Every structure is written in C-alpha cells, then in structure tokens.
Image 1 (cartoon, one colour):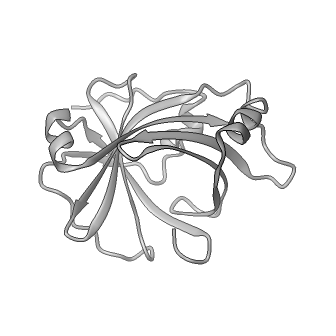
Image 2 (tube, helix red, strand yellow):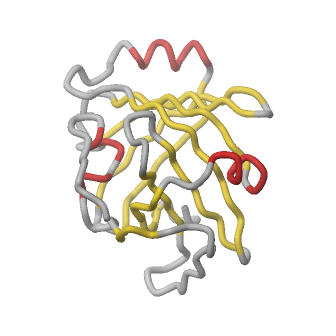
Length: 169
C-alpha cells in the first residue's frame, strides 16, 4: 500500500508451487481471515489472525474498491481482545478463509502466494505496485495460469461466499 492509503495490486491464479520449495525460498505464515458485516460507511471490513515465526498479529482492515486494481485500504493492528470482540460482528453469509501465505522476494519485488486448503492444484499470487504501469518480473519457478486482477470471484471476500473452481489445463 502506498502512503496515501491506496492499494494497487495485481493478482494471478497460479499452479500450486511445491511447498518444500516455498518453505526454503519464502517466509510462511498461517492466516485466518473473517469478514465483518458491511459498515454504514460502505466499507468491507475483516479481521485477521496471522501466525508465523515472529508470533501472532491481529489486524482490522477496511477496504473500498475504486477499480479492479485500486482500493482504498485502512488497516490497523489490534489486540487479541479486540479481535475476539470484532468476531462477534462477523458476516453470517461469508465463511472464514484460512490460508498459508508465503512472501517471496524476487528481483526486489514482494510476491504474496496464498495456498488454500480447498485447492489442491492452484493458488493465488499477488504483487502490490507503486503505480498501475509498473513492470513486473515474475519468478521463473511460478507457473501463471491467468491474471485474475479484474475477476472479482478471486477476491478473498468473494471466495468467502463462493469458491471458483474453473478448469485449468
């Protein structure tokens, strides 16, 4: 996210990389993400518990879509107690999303690769950009199936409602 609170990112559906390779090349953490009832300001909120080598961090995030690639984002770290309190306002229509996230650095770029328990053969990879025209150099070990930046079905919020299982070659 840039300093203005605007997040610019591209998202890709990829073949699921070997987890052994990811464990040696990237930093992994486990994420549990729960969506909250929509706020009166029209923002989509979520709470997240992220556990990794350095411990557990809780965050509260609110987002508003501006375009497929751009979002307003407000994120703050919260206490475990506030996390539990906010869980009481979870959206009953959306499932909690659990995933294993790997942060992979390649040529000075930060890729986030999310592995989900419901997908045995695919994963999602995101990269945050400084601007929409920024060139991306992809790691050669990653096989991109297709870009899904503009496909709202692949947002975590949408997957909390319905998981896409498009055929892949």
